[in-house]
Length: 275
Image 1 (tube, rainbow, N blue to C red):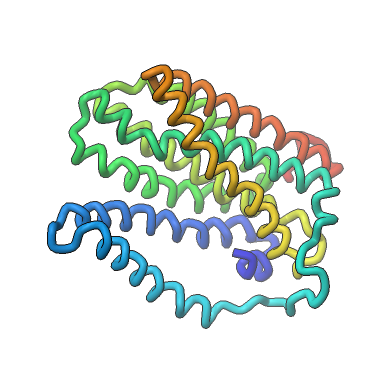
Image 2 (cartoon, rainbow, N blue to C red):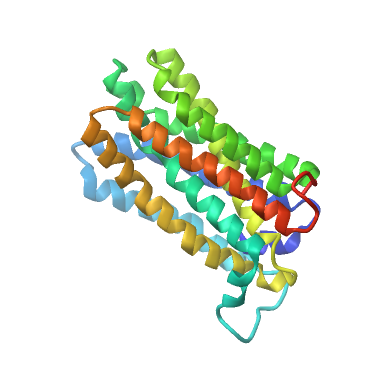
């Protein structure tokens, strides 16, 4: 991802959106493939996971061999802790942190929610693939639009739409409505992933620092993905309902969206600028 960011400037949102969309393709293929392997008594869990690992190894090794950074690496300071003194950088990380805590709730619990509302387990098992399929377009299209209307603006709109959808998703109680929610949520949440990444790499003034800025930011944001699902799982278990989890997650995503305004202000161009 850092290498892609070095090769593009004006079209950076589109380029990174297309690159990030690759993970959506994997998100469609692997849940279905692994589900089939787990159901096959001749394969089972252990070899099912090994096969997935071998596939990933076969795809990633050629990538690691062929991908090259455009600029030579920085020779000093493995970390750039001074980045955390920049308001714009901290605001983007804070916004993304809150968004990620909340946006993973439907991804993890939508199948369980669907089964609880009468959907067959077979159809519910495909919901994650549907979310990721829609996420492919959610990562590419907003990335293209971000180059025209602003990367932070794209992140703001992605967060607002995702937060509102999380507030409303428990109102979907039929198979058709749940499938629609899965698709729309996939598109909106995919826009968060692509916009978050491209927003981080626009902060450093030296393109050679893109990898470090992204790595440091993603390190912090990763903890949000770690703590979000267990917190929401505890809420669902405690109240025997998805409503409290929906309110908690939707609120965090919307608050994260508002923090994007701080990042926009820190650019010095104003909150209404195309940044």
